[in-house]
Image 1 (tube, rainbow, N blue to C red):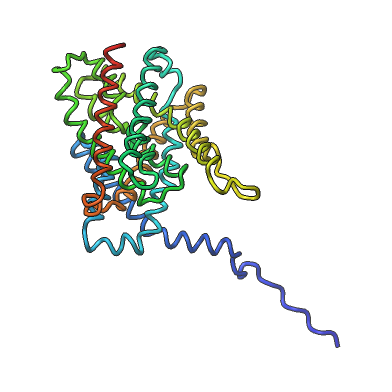
Image 2: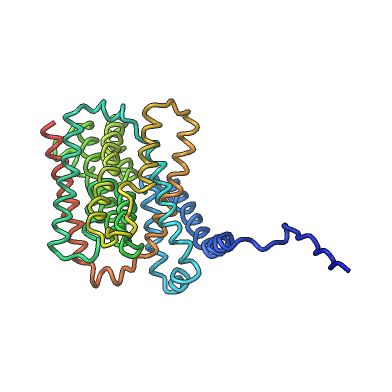
Length: 354
């Protein structure tokens, strides 16, 4: 007798492949933290609606920092919520930076004139170099000098997130620079309008000063809108000119690290010169410049970009421990305050020369 034929296999009952199982496991572990980050972003949006002077992204960072100081929450933040908060801090940040490119049009930047563009870039580069030097002089740990320099000279927490990816920094290392750039940007909202008239600036000059000297886009809007719509329009274009420098600064940093890294030996993998999300940022910027993107698409992308960055900044804020920062982070605070003063002074000088 011939042996009985085996019953046909039901593919629908087959076990998922190992990579699929791993992905499903990662997704399950990340879900609680991502959900909390999304809820915090929604709460930050509510705070911004109730108090428009508080930028949404600033509120998101502040919520993360606040929650991290609550003893009952710490076990969850370092336990069940940790995988999802890491996803929010890294992947949501990268996606948000890609969408940030849709805010940029090279045509709008060109309309500033080459003198203004060169002045803005010069202020950024000098601030970056001086801040990096101060951080190394005061012996800040790890990549903190580079992260603080990027955040204060380019575009706040978004630049810190981009640089932290290029340097391989973890969330804890990026948390202190994010907290400090948020602190100084919030102070700018209160301090710079008080100096507007004493410094003898016109509304347009004030907008230029704010755009060149304040860190985050939301903080620029909150500060410049006090001087009217003309000042706000100039401030946004000047600020986005600084954002444009994110791609080359990250690429240069990646190139330097690539050359120095020990993985550059034969047979080792090397970090990319231009990270994928930075390439996406450039592609989005070129799309906005050369394609007539419908307003509805731009508005949707703006909402998505803000939500993603809010989730990311909540995740980074949740890694801040104020007690440890106050005990050991005074040197970072000194560097941050000096950097804030440097960029404000340089930006003011550029406005006067222009």
